[in-house]
Length: 433
Ligand SMILES: *Cc1c(COP(=O)(O)O)cnc(C)c1O
Image (cartoon, rainbow, N blue to C red; front, side, top):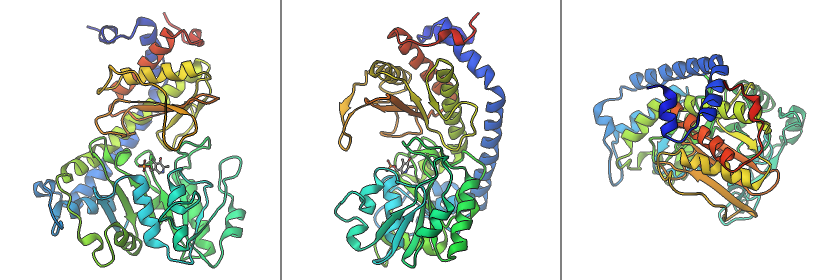
């Protein structure tokens, strides 16, 4: 049996298969470099496991107060050693990335302090945490003010703007590594390092926090290797490796992580309490898998970018661009194409592949949104998933893929769905014998 036989059986015709093969061949050198980075990061993670002396007992969990949780202690040591920070919180108690960021901000800011974002408008859900959109319990309600400096038109830091914005009240400087769902480019770790050094040159005592969501293991270094005081993220993205069913992490200096811990639980208790229930195994195993899983998601993003770009759709980033996160934006140009794309991605999923996603009115959005996700963990975006608001220019945001072959299949399914829906594409861009 040949590879294309099994694809045929699973609904991928010879033309679509050949497009996939041509794209994969064209990307072989790129994929080799991604595999090398995954190898580097895999050894880095493994080495951290060894240094933290992860043992079989660490895979068990605790209940109640969670005192003496050896698994939790080992897990947090693994994160801290891997990301080269003094301390870490990695807990099921942290519900998601936004929660991890909120804990970090609330824990490290006091009334009268000012928060400064130097990557412009932060991720949507942080607007209520900060109080940009008024919300009960926001930082604004506690007398923490906020200021932002936009990135320059080319997506780089506005150093002069940053210098002008820092004032005696400024306490914490926030950097968002990934573009999230904005149309800017994602920042590289070395660019972030340059900004961290610049901020510290203005005032050494400023705390620099990086929202590291979607960036973990894409490069060989993390922002903490470049001087950031805190890096924060979600376990249902890259570092959970697709196995963590929930959770978030906060890694950084001992003092900053400790201050965050008093918001995660409460003053006095901090990191000392917090049962892990039965999550330690999934968190440890997920982190172990994460470098390779992230590599699969990266390959998927680049593969989709190459194919959709050649078919004539605007893509961000382009296939040949260096890449610092796992999100791909594709401008499909019509609601029909967005729906067909999402149908195909759904058909490629391991769970709920037989259901058809429909656009719906989501809370917090002014337009209808369609989402494709057939994931083992609800809302997990390290698993193959796509979503798009049904509004011009009809973008879809695409990310994830636990294994490269399954991600490839999902993308080929999206092509098959476009073809079936009769969406105009430059199919001739691919030489198909
Ligand atoms: C996902 C994400 C977050 C946090 O989102 P949650 O859905 O709360 O996990 C924050 N910032 C960025 C850039 C993200 O991509």
